Length: 185
Image 1 (cartoon, rainbow, N blue to C red):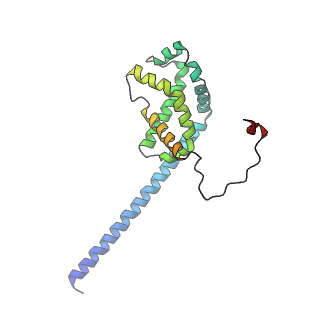
Image 2: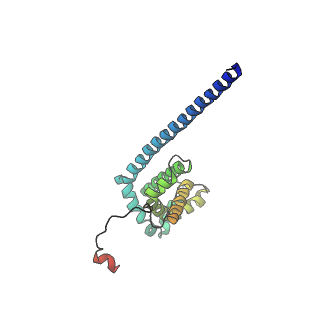
Image 3: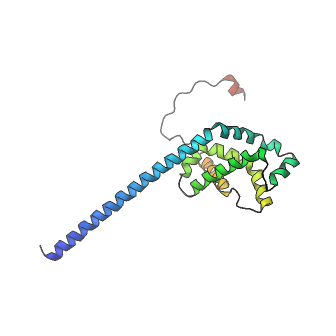
């Protein structure tokens, strides 16, 4: 075999080794990303399930009624957020951060929407009047924009899967008969 052929074979062999190494590195990065995503998802789940978060969710349910009071609306537009409403700011900031993680592809959008789409959409709709008016009052049109982005992602996911994401072709578990109270509604 001529030296040119040996050089060509050596070059091809080197290329194969480098390509295999690059592929292995990409696979390792993918596994690291998945691990980081699992950690982030678990921390979000723990926060959403915490008593303080659940208490804030209950407070948000009353917000529409509270916003009928012009004095409360005026207080919520002030530069210093009223102390009794700080939990609303904390909640909006939480969803803002989650929206950023989704937007930057640190957390998969479909996973976030599948797990928490209902919670995100309910809270967006409840806080949207406050957010819109604070954006205007503070001249910050981007205030909580990643929360809004996250709500849009969840709305689109819900529209794409109106009946849920149960895999097609997989049989469902047998269901018990509905309660009479359910049928009457």
